[in-house]
Picture 1 (cartoon, rainbow, N blue to C red):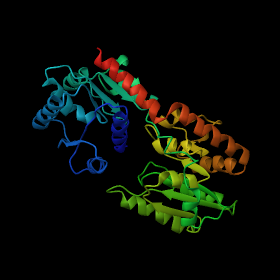
Picture 2: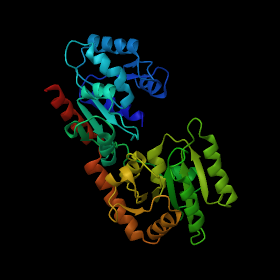
Picture 3: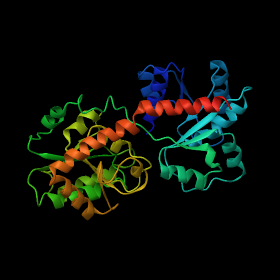
Picture 4: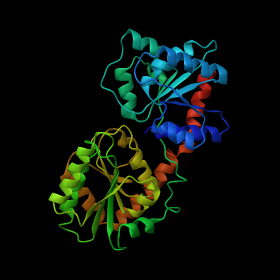
Length: 357
């Protein structure tokens, strides 16, 4: 999710909009930005009150003569709003809300912060509602602005399907069903492994690919899923790739993509898989409902239900015609509605409105 800020900076630079990045020094996003040659400033702010860091940001804005600030995290507003108030000219502030919150933030201090916010961009309808429910924002300040996919990078015509299949010894006659997520409770690994166990009793040509790795502090959960595979005797049918940087090639190697997450603000991995023309089986919850069309691009299944996931995967496996239909429609939907160039156009339009207030 945090890498989306880097993609946004790159896209703005492509449009000849001078853009620099603020982030925590030494973080993964900071190091990645430096490697890419982006101009990046280290701001040591993780909590709420950071007057010295706010003054530092104000100095960056003044010295660079910047016109607008856009953050990808609401907590950053506690540094950014004081910073822009130190600058003589009016600096619009926009925020993208990537994750929902269950904390109501309508006290005096939050009203002071959010009153100075020009736009809050919600990455899905469920996040839009969450913003209005929990933050002191009026509907005119909340705008739907989905996350997006670089459909030129995630293009089935450019990916190397055989590279991954050869790496993991996947014969051409094998149907590969995959999921891509960090190892964390709520991503649906348990339902995926259970469905795998159910389906291999019926089919002898299935392989199940689990892509990703645990984040810090989530190793126990990752081991739990490995143990679940081993104790179920599924080692010959379910395999783990670990972290991969060649995601377009990995997705290309799959025949069906499963997205069993219990709750997702958007579902960027799902959108990437659809951009690669993958037929998908998706849990019927939250932000993913903005992306898929049941029966046209995907099959929805009841969230947390391994039995329903099994049934919907079975329906796809047994219908090559349906798989082909979903493959075509999925790629078409992402290109037409979630391409990163479209997102960049929309966000620049909002910038212009904010600057002309």
